[in-house]
Image (cartoon, rainbow, N blue to C red; front, side, top):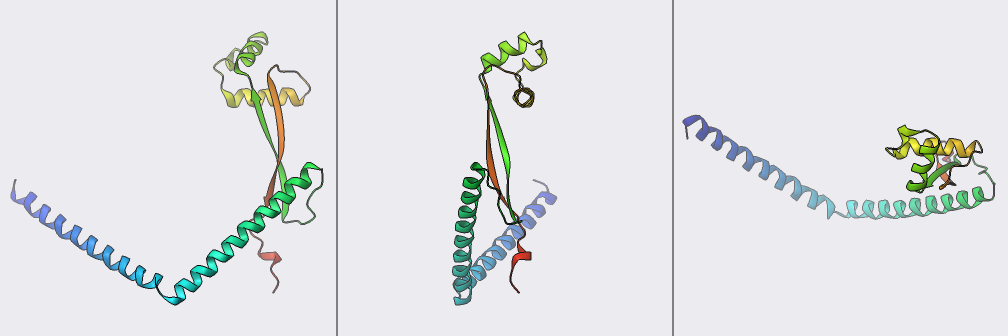
Length: 151
């Protein structure tokens, strides 16, 4: 080993020791902060608020979904839904159909391309054997609800 390597290894050893010492100091400070009454109080408030938000969002989404299935749109401008369309198909039927319609570029079964084509054809009233289209509402809630906060 040459002199330069020896010095570089010594410098690396010092740098690693400093890194470890600084990490240990930060961890100790974080542990001290986390054990403080103020932190524990805020942590409890945060957990309670998160639990409440999760419950409300779940309840609101379930209500939107149920109403959407009945054709009822949300009254509030912050709420809505978009329809999610899933296309499923039997690959063997899809290959047979693609050959019969001369869609040889689909025979690699590029599922994304086939799904788009099958969806548009079925929605246009054409029959594509083995293809089923299922549309389900997906509830949406605006991310920023600050305009609905009471002053």
